[in-house]
Length: 638
Image 1 (tube, rainbow, N blue to C red):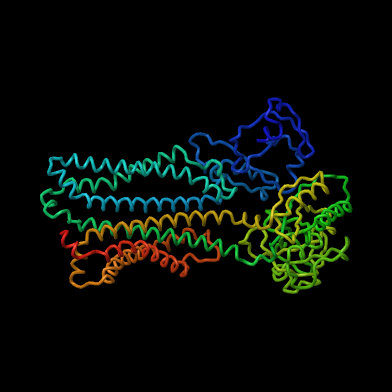
Image 2 (cartoon, helix red, strand yellow):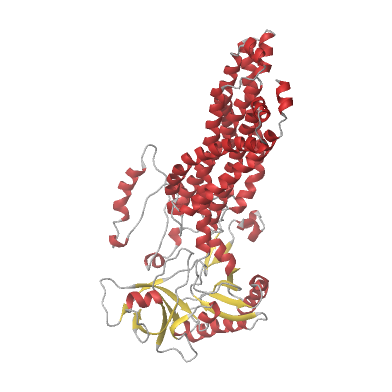
């Protein structure tokens, strides 16, 4: 991509020299477009580690990945044992931490469990579909009993009848598999559009030959499992008896099998609907928490400033405050500020500190936020005690504002006037503010402090926040232009609304809930279709019985309750099996939940109501058809 976008895709790119981070590099090769750098976004440039100055690799905290290929037959555990002495054989072994994992595990990371759970949900949907097909084939077999009897009476052998019926099942299964592949090809781009961009290997998701083969195998398995039994049963039918009875022998065993299949569909649907409800409620609970600040109409810009060793501390402070003033003076802007770590921006920092007059077994740790003066006003963070930063807070005496959790944990609930030391600089606490959700919605309250940028000019600060009077998305262009004019040598890394950043922070949870909801909805629809097919077939088989009941005085309401009672019995049976199974399944997804317990009573109450509603909808037409049976016509037809 960089080859085409930056160099026009020409062959003269090899040997060209470019400047990156004030260092000159020669281009020696171009990677293929499918190059995936250990599951992350494809890089524009890949630099050799050996050419990096040693000083840059040995000072401070550094993280890197090494990639190797195991020898054939060597297990991963053996590689771990062999590499551990080399990893820890440095000058400070206690500071060296590393783990050896497969590339797949490293790429999937925390996504493996959710993706496995969603794969299991898809498998349950497939089971429900297979049970539906089995029920339909059983019902179709009964309706064709008279036809098969006629064929047998006309000389068709048992083998010929069985092959015909089985062939029809195979053709039906393959047609269904082909239709499923077409629907998958049409629906997959929509599902991919719902997925967060951070999902590993997202670009490779699509309808593949392997998936088509799996669909074909599923079709064959469905035909073999659920087409063979009806075919063998009908091929052995007694033509004389079947013709004498007019095809009314519905087969008690097969009716029982159909009821078991429908109850199983309901039970599996209960599991999927319950899981989707729990995941959906998790997203609601996450996003409905107090944030500690007002996210409405906030625009966040992250900048990468050029390094300038000659830039003095005073000029660095003036540069930051000048850009803040420019952004605050834009038409439509209310306030502006700058910070080292804006909420939901992905930036994060922490420091060990010392509390004056107190000793701890280990130095306390707190989240660090370096901000400009109007930070709390811009983000709408309420000050609980004391004050925020003021113009009188000049370089010299360092002041700080701490969170309530910092005060409670380190300063015994009385922070104002106390001091803590950061990098040998004592900071006087002048205010206490509410904690804010910073990295993600599930953040727990943790100690944090805010320090003033002009008192710590050596600390990096490159994120600017603007509060607007109108929807912040409408001011993106104006803010971008103002930054480009005021800081022409800086590059804008990200420029987005706070609402979009917050939405991205729960993108994975939302994606899981959406997929689970889709699977739950499909399972509910399939269960309703299976219940409808069973009841419709039952009404057709019991037409004479219903006619006799009505001739003997049964009212239409009695007939409706007869059909409805059967439906409710099937749903109740499915719930009796499905609820315990759903409770077990909810324990599997417990680690993905937030603010809701796996055995939440109201969740399962809602699931039961939804299943009952689907059952009533599926029962409506068969019950109405049964109530409209004319007893005279039913008995005359007999």
